[in-house]
Structure formats: structure tokens, C-alpha cells
Length: 117
Image (cartoon, rainbow, N blue to C red; front, top):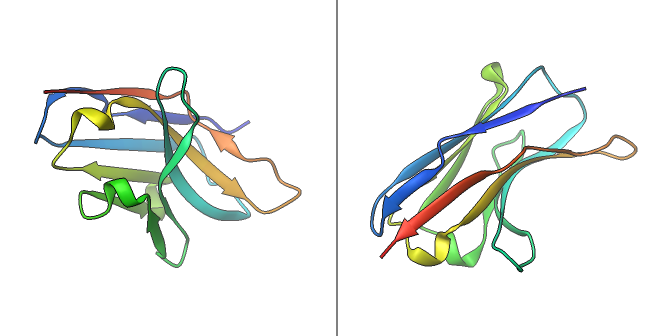
């Protein structure tokens, strides 16, 4: 069983920066993309950013120009650099490994990001 260990969350003031990391316990096969999602209390989990092995990226409109996703394949780690943070970025952030069927996706345990105004 693969474990995804997230780190880097915390409390930051508006305008500040954080870098989230998600390290997989071992190399994962049949990956479509690695991604970060976020969820607020009572809200739906939404895609924040995703990256493929070919380094194709996509971002939610709300974070474009502020967040950058990257993937260090050698370290089995995906990062989310978050800058110019806003209070509305406050959420639990989850790492995701999207895999090709019939293989199951993986999720991290979540890390809290809180942006104070």
C-alpha cells in the first residue's frame, strides 16, 4: 500500500507564501497525473492544480498566477508553491495520485492551510 505524506501547511498572513509537499512512500506506476485538491468545511473537494509526467499543468482559475505545481520524479514528491495567499485559500489541502484504470487512485491525509486577513 502506498502512503502519501503531506507537509508544509500552517497559518500564514494574507499575502504570504507556503510550500506544500507530498511524498509517496514508493514509486507509483500507471500515473495519469499528480494533483492537489482542497476542501472547506461543508464544501466540495475541488481541484487546485495538477501535473502530468510530461509536465503539463492545469490550475483552478482562482489560483492561476499565484500557485505553482511541480513534480520531482526522483523523489516521488509533488510540490505546491503558494504565493500571494488570500483568506479564501483557507482549506484542507489533499494530495492526489490519479492513475489509469483499473488502478486505484491514492489520496493523502490532508494538511490544513489557514490564511489570516
